[in-house]
Image 1 (spheres, rainbow, N blue to C red):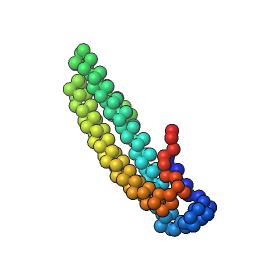
Image 2 (cartoon, rainbow, N blue to C red):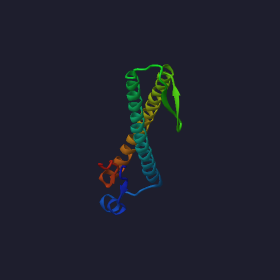
Image 3 (cartoon, helix red, strand yellow):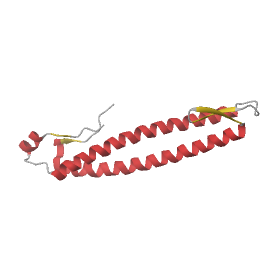
Image 4 (cartoon, rainbow, N blue to C red):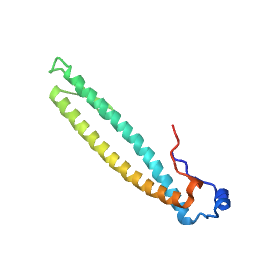
Length: 138
């Protein structure tokens, strides 16, 4: 999470800059956008893991020798048995949905990063080194 810190003492002593309500609202908005971006990033990581699991399941279906054997498929919290063709269809549907979700999350991440970049530019222009909006290293 990015640190949003403004030292009022350093602002007043360094260059006599005062934090206005508008400045505080920008700082708060940046913090909210940063939290949203972190959440989206976690969601994206989870969705990519889900997609990899679905790809692995598709690969595993290719190894099934008996095509008439029922294939267990998770629906909600239960397993439902499908034949090979239905299982392949369900996997393709699930992969398509996850890919669409990933694209949607990536688009939203781009939008949030654009907003954050704009706010960061405005805040650094006013406060310079007196504010830290950079992400902490993990």
